[in-house]
Image (cartoon, rainbow, N blue to C red):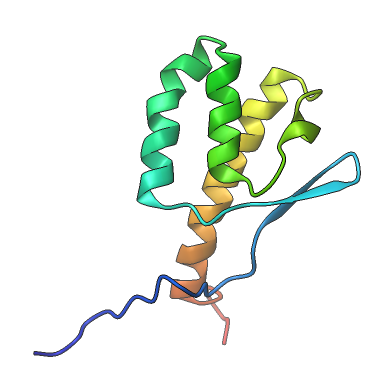
Length: 104
């Protein structure tokens, strides 16, 4: 049988995504179905303003200590989570599809 797609989960095709908050860099974990499910589960509590759910969502997305985010306004924290998920997912799609029209 012909292999149509081979996936190696140990390596990544794209550079890791980092965010910088007040000079401290945090690396974004690869977004997986498991992490997306956890974030989705936490989303209702996050929308209701649950600080614990927001922290858990950040811990699902970021490597290391998320304490630099403790002083960031909640609206910005939510935007950070949404941006991290979007950029992480699009990074894999862009890599697979190439550089776009006119690209080599």
